[in-house]
Image (cartoon, helix red, strand yellow):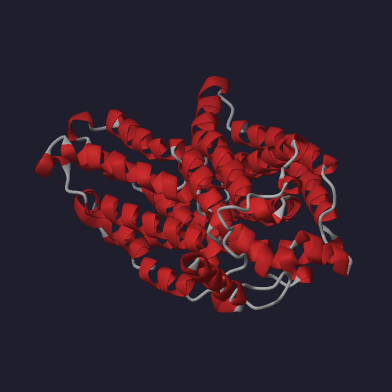
Length: 442
């Protein structure tokens, strides 16, 4: 009896620190603490892509050239396979124990894995153990990243004032795009200051360690966040009303798949600028910075517009315009040797894409019942990333090689947008308009 009483008092104490539904209890620092995990994910993704050649030289020295690069990219792709498992387990943990413990767990594992990649000795130093350790850290990282988005996005929806949920969720995308900008800056500076031999030896490790440096600050910021849900008592399972319909899952996966493909195609522009547009490596990094900077501002604007006019109108208009302009923008980039025109086309795509994808994420999150929001969103997002995010750059490169068309990435992105736009049309408006709706969405 005394143990039960103590447990109930603990639950009551936690409940007192829980953010009431719709209450604006989380300030700017709290929002950034949530978004920093997503930022670290994208920073790591691009950093590994930028320096995959150097990583291949370090861990697969007997396969210099294209085979070493292939092995490095395969190692990178291994992490995607663990994302659904991480999304399911950490996401459900976020529903049972609270959003804050789940966010701390995923972020801690993420930082540990990135540090491990940065500090793993080379093949020349420890032999076959080097690539094995690299794969192990990538698996841990994939597991952690799979469980990051569900609890953190659920937290933003629940901590936001009801009329600012779109803006709060847009911080997820904004911090990710700022990470794109940061990765571009780091890549540009290192490629400018270091020789190829120095990049192979230690330069790529510097890029990862810069990402690791934010982990202690991110953990400190997250530890000070209030909780938005009380931990579920073991003898009280989720209510039947919290079950998610198959229709909602299918529509959500279609929208997440479209958002993932379009986002990763834009991230692919660094490689595309060098391979198809014949830009120098430094200009290609500048292209990455342009895309990251423009998208970061457009993310916040998309969130505000979705709060003002509704989720469906903003994303449907953006999807329609983006579908019509993607191929012409890629065509314009390839028909002229003008760097300015290429950057302008990239900027236009970078503005339009968040207008479509930010309201999609808000819609999906608000559509899910609070009791299972973290786990369901984490699993859906992780599966979408594993299937579409892990394959997008490979698919567009393969399509280019098979078709011989430099417009292959544009057509692939357009097809994904059509599927996502159709799902958006079939979804319901989730922006709350009455106090009752505010309370129901929680």
